[in-house]
Length: 606
Image 1: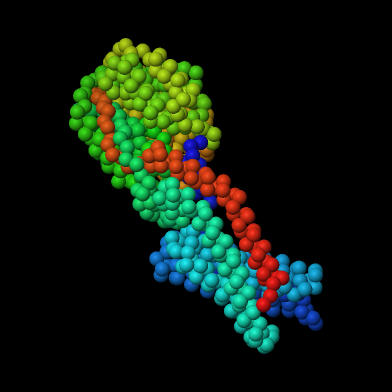
Image 2: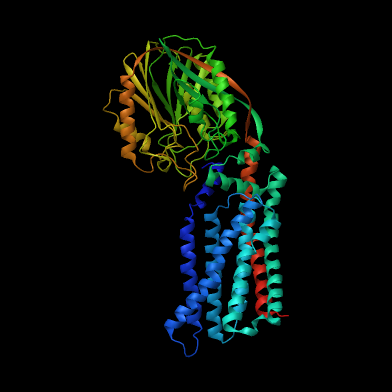
């Protein structure tokens, strides 16, 4: 599995939160239960259980429920007014529910301890719980809303202050009129000191983990997290602006095959050495669809040799690929000559080869073995070797990307797979007969399926190429790889159709990677339905067959702003090191702070 997609897997922790009304209902119900449990644990003398249950419930709703509902509304308003992002009202209300639940559990534990040891630590337990939720709220606001620490720390005070204020008021009015005396000052000072200790530990922890990002990449880790969440929640592309600070301009290439009928271009098969990532709609993640839509005819955008190092940092970079293809098409020379489709293999490496005019297409797959992206340098070597051996002008290398497991690794220089690819290219017969060629096309967005099944915006595109009565189906899913074994299942399922060869490919789009998995390959679910789409697409493409002329091209893409080999690796290594260090620092720092707070609140005094 590539490192970048492993990081993309963090998206599984971003869930759809409940609507505001459900959070409010939850707060009212939970607060009633918290108050009732507190009163039932500490039974009031000469008062029945039912009365204790109802009285405690009303106490809980008033102190915890109403205060938390108010804080949910106020938190959102404060963050929004101070130009924070991400915190919608439903997020704010859910945070209040979570914080109130944490506080309630701490108080209930305190009440149980009070009963067991016959000591009164109810108030200290409440103060401790308020300190915990204050630190928690501050961390959430600071880490996700793109606000300064001071703003987060002040906003984080709202819920605990409202709860303590409501508790003080209820106690003074209905329980103990002397409660507003000197004890309030003591309680306030204890709470302030404890809150400062805990929140400074959180501040120190964030600063420690943020330092490597600032030093190595020049970006703020909280900015990265906030904008990532904004993209996941709202589709915001503001994160692309952050990527610009760490981008690297590269030169790469795009290769293509153009099929021209009597009335103009019929089909275009493109293989850019640009990676469709990193995820969602960021950068080049939806490149296969966006690039194809820039042309007025049927266009397939296959996966060229490239890794996450070649992720465009902005959607606008795709325009450079378009311009390169159109520039190359102006120089294409067409002829009706094409060869039959032939397969070659060497150990795990398998290729399908077809010659078109003075160029060739090489469809590379390691199926049934699992392999991820082919690195650009490896692809360049394959192009150079195949051009030399077969004496062609253009070599269109396609990484079929059709056999996946979570352990799949990239094909990098020095891997055994590289030499297997070199060996299999040496087996290609360069002297194949040429014949007239027909092409038929069909595309379907696969409307009954969506990203949950690993299907991107372009669905399925199929091109059937007929040469000397041999029909070859080029089937391309707009998906990020394919479950291992599904390729062969598809091939077997269409064996009865009027085709002689088939290859199944995926675009490697990363728009489907915003769900529960970092990867979301096609074939995890609904395989029979997907196969029916394949069968239909082949039949429709056969019906569309007509004579064409064909030409190939290779064009350089200059100054494409990407993550780059250096920064992509640096980002992953930085994240990995921060995660590793956090596993040690976080428990030590936060547990130490908690112990100090406990000692201060429960055993200290003023």
